[in-house]
Image (tube, rainbow, N blue to C red; front, side, top):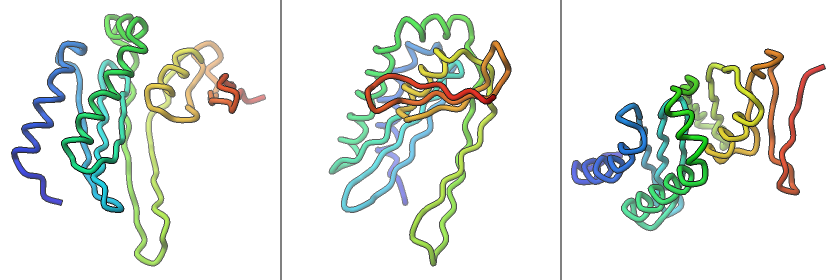
Length: 164
């Protein structure tokens, strides 16, 4: 879709308010789409190897942008102490590459995400999972070097899957 320069400027202006948190070391990716008469905006900010993500559907892109900014601000506020510590120390590198494939004959869209698995503690993996808004997160345990999974349980607690 074509995005007008006014919208691009507005997005850049609104996202620039996060510069104070990241000392210029952040990279933001914004994806705009239309589905079912709603305007969707997906904002992903990668800073000091931490990901902040928001995907919002609204009646207009401006409303979706405002809601996305509020969501990411909430993520930063909730994790301010941990984030401040990690941002000062440089954190872990954690880039994400997304590839979307669509087959014209098949209805479902298959989304493949690839990323390097970095060593971290289960607590750090839970933080990343919560920042991304996901139900699970795959990581290498920094103590055992095993590939593990943390996940959110139905009762609100967290689970850890460790290979034998």
